[in-house]
Length: 297
Picture 1 (cartoon, rainbow, N blue to C red):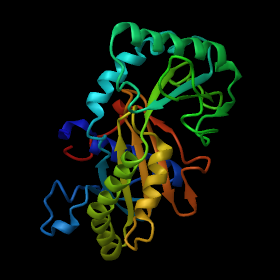
Picture 2 (picture 1 turned 180 degrees about the vertical axis):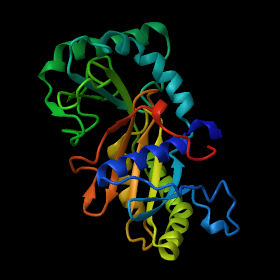
Picture 3 (picture 1 turned 90 degrees about the vertical axis):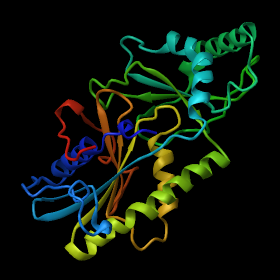
Picture 4 (picture 1 turned 90 degrees about the horizontal axis):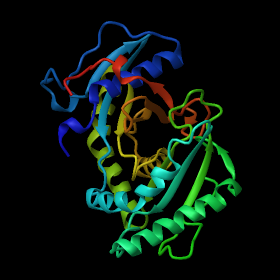
């Protein structure tokens, strides 16, 4: 993946703004990027440091890469599920967000226009008949049931549909929307955790050095822009496993979601006494046009 895929400087600024609002404190004018400035000690080259209120902070950013076969799978799945998006997306006057989960391998073995249309029609019929009978859950809460709970005649894979209430999120861009999420399981989920374990190995040491030497509060900023294979809950749980037992873990870990042009979301996955599942830690919206490019990337 090329370097332009992610938004390091603006993602860090979004997290900083969230910290300022949360702690009711403003950053001082001492912000700088030891990485951009090529600090003589490579182990000190975190992406950004600054003071907020009376607390000095050190930030390290990383993008969460999609899985290796994402592009090919997305091409095939995109064609298979396009009629569902066309039928159920942008529902007017609807305060619900619908999320359709299917196996990442759903399109494997499906070929021929007639066979594909049969699957598409069966899925549309199932959603029309069953959507309103499914539980309506507050957006951000835990998924109420497994990803592969449902089945339908002529559909060669299992799936699930979730209805999220957006009434607590005024003017949310997700209201009335329908999206699909390929669900990764087995070895692919192990690959996700292995990726995050590598992140810990590469990023934690630098942050720990600033905490030890400068008294900095250490913050890891992870950015994801993959609507298909990534969601906050799986990242939060995989990261909790990846960092378990480490003595060099940062004080705070954030996930910045940039898969929509606007808004972006900032979610704190973990900090002192708080996790992703605590109210107030999730889905803080930012307009990327208002953010500052704090680093060269």
